[in-house]
Length: 112
Length: 115
Image (tube, rainbow over all chains, first blue to last red; front, side, top):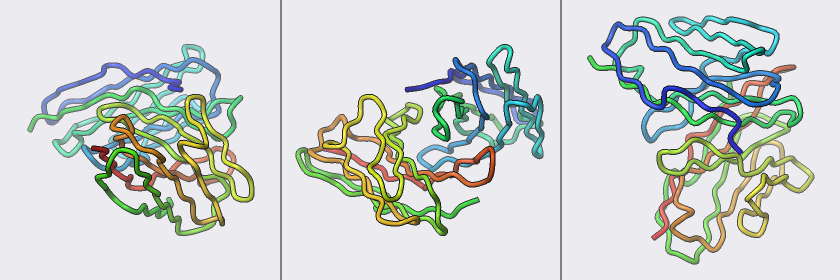
């Protein structure tokens, strides 16, 4: 069953702008991971943030985690047309071990 | 990261038939997972495939419909049995890598269309 919910469901921005996507989840987690999926393609692992971490960076990506609010955000800075994709968060919960449950996803369109 | 391949990459099948999807990993892994992604939807976990034991199925998925094999630590198969159009989806296998907190890596997926 899906653990997370992402918001917004769809986001359209101009190239060069920043894109922020949010993920909320229901139960305590071990870690949270963000993925990108280009249309019709497989999932690409972007970043993992552990439950004891609050922020992580990877290139133009910045992920935050607020366990008190059970939420995470993914910020893509200086967006490019190639960033157009669907973005998903996935959580590994404490009571399910290494099984991951995916959020509903955010469809991002970056307009050149 | 992990190099994961799936076969076939896509298939169009008749209602009532079965399709077996293969997943091959470039190195040994303890746990492999099978997901389904219906058109325009997120991923739903079907089952966890552990080598040497029966797969563990998520609620709503049963072994008779989705039998899974895991003969060794680098390979698994998922069969979609007695297919109906509702089974049209992308099927993905995944593995975990790392220690402590695991990163999950996915195969490219198998796009199944049932007519």
